[in-house]
Length: 81
Image 1: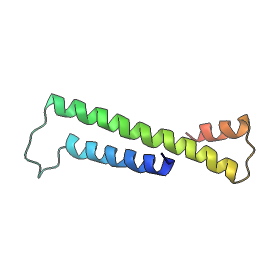
Image 2: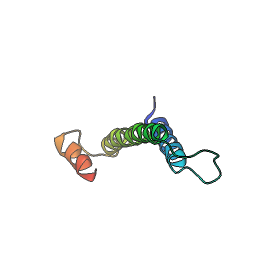
Image 3: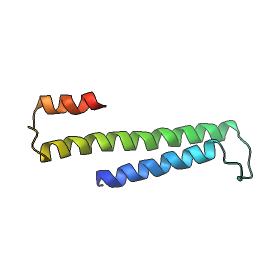
Image 4: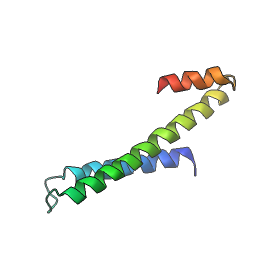
């Protein structure tokens, strides 16, 4: 799967989890422990997908734009995170 697709999917999952975690005032249900737990799990999966994919994509882009493919480039990208 392409990293941009994974980033987009992760952002959508995170958004959905935050919408239901609230929940938004026009939803007809109340907060419950299972709802909060499932929303937090969904948020973690979405955030992890976004973070890991963007990290890998930034490494590939840095190398594609002329940075050397060595440990110093990886350290520079890691330091950004």
